Amino acid sequence: MPLSRRHALGLAAALPGAALPGVAKAGAVEAELDLKLVLAVDASGSVSNERFELQRQGYALAFRDRRVMAAIASLAGQAMAATMMQWTGPSLHVQVVPWSLLHDESSAAAFADRIGTAPRRLFGGGTSISGAIDESRRLMALQGPRALRHVIDISGDGANNSGRRVTAARDEAVADGVVINGLPILNVEPDLDEHYRSQVIGGPGAFMIAVENYGQFAEAIVHKLVTEIAGLDGFSSEVRRLG
Image (cartoon, rainbow, N blue to C red; front, top):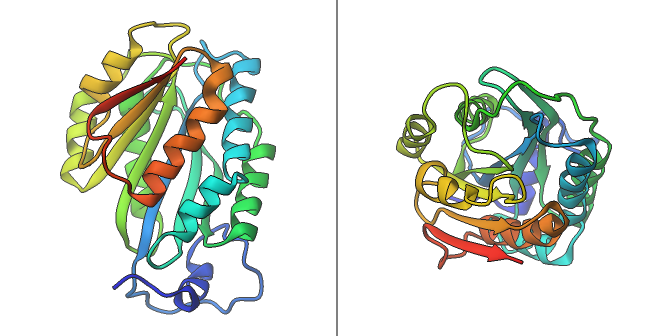
């Protein structure tokens, strides 16, 4: 059964980084979260510091946006867990914001603050979307409570060019019940949306929103987060393009 708000608060200690002080450490966890969400952010060489900042601040603003907060409130148990990682090459990825419990405006704002102050830790090393998928699955396995839905949210401006085949990583993740959604940024590779559509996204209701440039990232990520947090239908394998 989805957990109640009261039970969600009791899970805080089981979620590293959850901004809920004063909650006693929980014992065995049987209830489920509504959602585990990994935000996988491209930090490869094609992403300048200016472009990276647009990604980071876009995510930070999104978790303060009323539409995203309403999506969190719409969850049956009113609780989800989220984390952020930066990725480049097959083995180059860093978890920059720890797993955090999101259940209300205050916890979403605290998560936004963590995103906004998380420094860039990677600056090159190739573009391995397959490595980002594999690392996201590992982070999900390490995070304690079970969830009804598991979603990887990948943004980037390049196709998979290192590591194993991205379709192999995608197919293994989907077989484990993970949904992969994408936000390709097309200013470097204009056909990147086709790569994401055919080789990256996968799972029930998987979707992507393509943007022409980094300046459109902030609004696109709000629409994307609302859709994946609320579990909305109507995007299955669909490409939405802004711009």
